[in-house]
Image 1 (tube, rainbow, N blue to C red):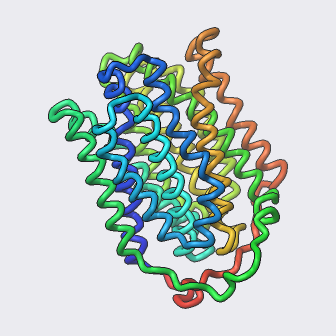
Image 2 (cartoon, one colour):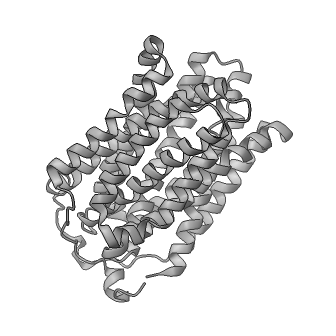
Length: 395
């Protein structure tokens, strides 16, 4: 195991998502202050997902053909290049173009980083290391919005976008010092992506991810409104509890996986996630908020590294980029559509009814998983990567 590369990769992921998450609470305010209408605010924020989705298939092939590190550097480089353009281009049309390119950068970065984590991990410990390194993402999204708001409030939007650029540059620097992977002798010849993707061990976990992120997108679109109405204190505390619980369970994911397997983590995590959804409408004070946030975070934190681990273990080194690209596209699509589909439900029945109704979604995903793949699926491990062959199975 290349510990140096794992540390650098942790830094690259954390810095990249700090850069990105700083814009979550501040970009809508920036567009509004530029004179943008609510529709234009929604367009600027939402078109990012289109940029991510549009390039996923191309990114997947490039990650397999060109290597993980070049695409990871491309993603960080695009984030760095876009940071000053947010301040320079104040026309809505120009901002839409910036967001599209920024979204393409996220697509390249996430596909490459997850494939690289899987490459660097022993096959029997992939879920463990996916849990460890994805915790960088969780920490970033826990503190990044706070940093973004404080910079914008105290020093202005120019300082905000400078901060976005600084963290993107740090991500690029960490990625630059990653060891270059040696070229493999087996790179010649066509790759059968169709067979790699169109198998139950990939399609079923991907379908569960789409369902879960549909619920996730709908929940996080309207939950802040519900919490603001019901809580007399800063409802941002909910997201801190949620992120903390998700982080803790990710750090324990490896031990759970080795003892019980990835399958029980998937359907068990989905069941806990559904319980968390059911408790959200009951939030009225600090105690109920903490309980709901913890259950919700534990459910998602248990499910996500396990489902990524399953997908990583059924892909080979030559197909892992494309397989992860397709799998992550389900995440992008679910998050993007979740709020859109939840809107009419909220308009007709209210936010509590939406949350209660969404409980069925992760339960349906768990039922699909168990019905098709069983309670404890054991996918055949792919061929070892060249790096793994050289390093052996040392941790």
